[in-house]
Length: 73
Image (tube, rainbow, N blue to C red):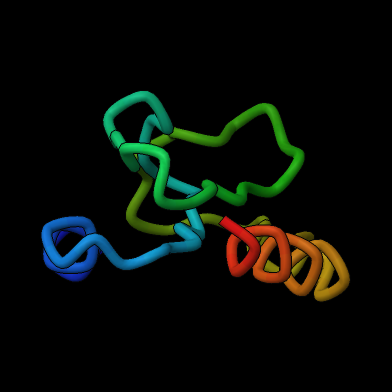
């Protein structure tokens, strides 16, 4: 995640970061994108394994809407 993110930000590309295990405040997108996370209390848990399939909770419509908004930037 971080290498691709850093390269994209360095090249001033717009990004959508899908986050579930990291603390969202560890990332700075410099106004070039958005962070999408599942709506669960345990986001940022740093677990290696989990029984909750939380990334499936991010609705495709939200992803599409976010991408459209970022393309307008």
